[in-house]
Every structure is written in structure tokens, then in C-alpha cells.
Length: 143
Image (cartoon, rainbow, N blue to C red; front, side, top):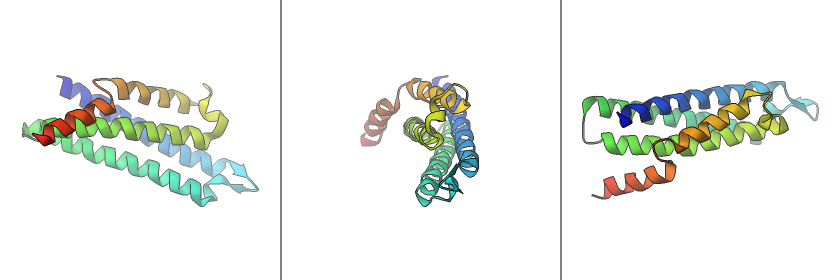
């Protein structure tokens, strides 16, 4: 039951991270600074690619965890701990980057970026935070 709930909130987190990435890319194309869209700045492009990569890594880990749990194989516990660690760390990273790239507007309640980041923070704390799952992952792989 806990593993199913963890998969469900992980799927929610991946959806949120994907939306934040899309909204950030969209915003960067419309926000003009120094006469050009901020999406043309290479440093911001790299940050948005990192956001996208974090989403895809999380999605891949979730597929692995879901398949391992469905098959009932020995990797299911490790897969779930790895997934929840990834969701916690990647969710925080994606949320922080979205807020940073949106600037001051990223923390206002008028934009949904702040609401999404708040939800990612709550998801990290559900069923054990990222650090707890990293400890469990280390313990399960060491034995």
C-alpha cells in the first residue's frame, strides 16, 4: 500500500516538474532583458536543460520502480528508495530553478510556479524525505 502511494505521489511530482519546466521555457521566451528574450542566454538554456533532464531521469526511475513492484522482484525496495530520493532532490532542484528563472514573480501567488514548488516540497516530505530514502537505499544495497 505504501509503495503504491509512493508511486502515485512520485507520478504527481513528475507531472509537476514537467509543467514547471514547460512554463519556465515558455516564460523565458517571452521575458525580454537587454532587448532580447532571456531564453537566448546560454546560462539559462543550460539551467532549463538541467530541469528537463531531471524530469526525464525521474520518469525513467518511476518506470523501473513500477515494473519492479508489479513483477514483485527483489529490486522493488531499492527501486522505490531510489525513486523517492530522485523525486526529492530533482523536485527541489526543478522548483528552485523555475522560481529563479521567473525572478520575483516566481514567488508570488499570482503565478502557479510558487504553488507547484510548494507541492513538490510537500511531496518530498511524504513517506520519508530524500535523505531518509538515500539511507534506506544504502542499507538495502549494502546487505
